[in-house]
Length: 390
Ligand code: SF4
Ligand code: SF4
Image (cartoon, rainbow, N blue to C red):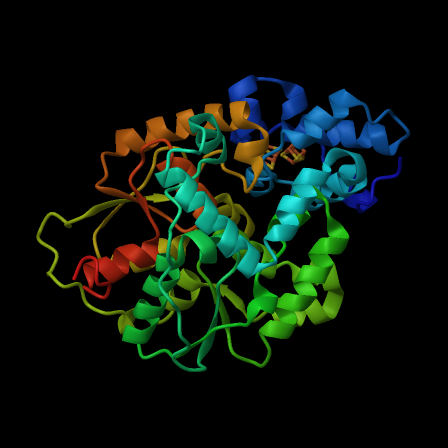
């Protein structure tokens, strides 16, 4: 099988192994095959005519696509693209019908809302098996969501699928913070219901392209597009890879919300109560991989949060938490082992709250009892901008 990857990029790995200690699946298994170097070696064998058997599927499907290996690699091997191309080649047989149907649901907000409401009722009636809740890291699903209304046209806020259905208070907090800075926020229509990140990860290339075109149509004009989900932001910034120049022009308008705000930090609202001498709230920052390794935008989160408390660094240099989009549901054992390491590091930090700018990481860590909030929620709370805490 010829893999749909750039063969110069596939050849770029010099097998130095410097990425191995940064790879979460290698760290928890110690298996060379489940390291970036091992995965690239397996891709080369298949690309050269080797078998695409169960062993190869396991090597590929157990990758979290965290891209920590890219950050560590001195040869700049674009591992994420190699993995996406390989999954695309395997998708026809490795992505079952039920999984395709679940991904398709994400692009239909009314259907997603209806399913969320059914799930919320079932949870309250204790009809959701605990094993399923654990496997999906389900939060307490909302029966009702706060409504969002546009406040202007200075920027777009990308609202997305699961985040909009399950964590809309984060969007409310983002809009409150932007509003307090004098920024008017426009909201896209339902064509921007899904950025296609999970589809890209699964190798569903054609569906990802279709969703990308819909997003672009729903977010026209020159205004910046702000994203408060790290995974969605990474996907929206990579539309050039899916759609060429047209996608690149769109992606140049996309910013992680903290990235955009950090350049205007002096406009941020002041905290309700001045910080006391010891720095106040201890905020541990969990770096979502798609913010740190893909967008390379982990610093702005700290710039913003430092105005509201003491930023506490975790002692693992931003290692993955194991969530990985749908990974935690598809590979629960490995994901759980990776999370156990992360939770231990978080506990050692003795923080009051953990800030995570990605909904998947937040749900996955919350399911393990970690007190997680989105940075925008922390800012809104500290400034008395949200009703729950004002
Ligand atoms: S993307 Fe993450 S899990 Fe996959 S090989 Fe690279 S470091 Fe390992
Ligand atoms: S991916 Fe990069 S860091 Fe890892 S073995 Fe290959 S060249 Fe070395």
